[in-house]
Length: 399
Ligand code: PQP
Image (cartoon, rainbow, N blue to C red):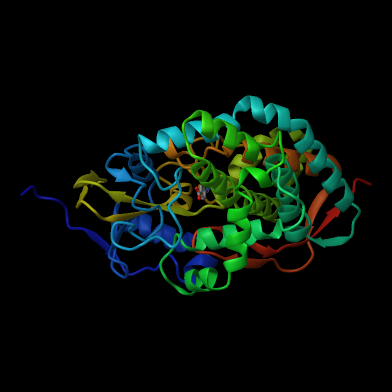
């Protein structure tokens, strides 16, 4: 027996309504309780500190993904849908799947999309910047990715709303079987059918990214059904993440007019500003890993076969890593923020997310003199995503 420090325990529930409404005080309590904390309610482990979140993500052999990246342990309970070949996989299988998807989302591919994405953002924001009140969630944060992402993938116009419903369900099912989880999977048979149907090659426009997944997957030796599963990853991941990235960006800028003034004076700050949004209000708050062997993390030895909750959003505000972490500051270097994860599973779509964020923030800097609230924002609660349901805004115009 090796002596280890007593294990820090907490009775906090990171998936309770209170926690999800405002996670930041509880994040601080979890960080201060210990580098690694036992969450008694669920019989799982958690870390809210930057160094330990990074360390776990850096060691995919000991902290695996194939047992699920939500609270459910696929070794003990059947997953609610066939596991993802990308997200819920380990090397060597993960490596092959990642190669296909990374090829489609390459830097060269993003350069080909940039003009279209920028023009769409400019047009959409210009149309809103006339001093009237609008709800920035449906009218911008949802509408923009729904158009540019779905067009890029090659999805038909009809039925796109299924992408939103499906993603909300997927992200709720990474949590425990609370009401958010059970409600999410209860009502959605037709959404699941639409999604699975639109993963097939016949449904994806030639020349689009969905069709390209099929081509690249076939070349990599995947069957058509497996290729469809890789498209499913695209459709699961591509909308709600950026919807809430953009929504959170609009919220941050409305709440920090001085920061918007900085952006407006120098629109070249758009990319850095979006990165700071992801640090400050990470749309994807958490992911789990499962230990494959007894492994030391932050001075605690976690046994094999245990679920470990990585609080990405808490790591992004860890004062051990960041100066004034609770200050939204677009001038800081937010690189090292773990909203996109880190290591072999780091977000494969991050270049597209950044392209969308940069395009919308640049358009705002160009067309709006100010971003003002015109009513209270309303939160959308989800076991994994942090974002808004409604965000009434007014964009003032240059006088
Ligand atoms: C945050 C893959 C990635 C992307 C899947 C899947 C689902 C969600 C995500 C989460 N994701 N950014 O089903 O393969």
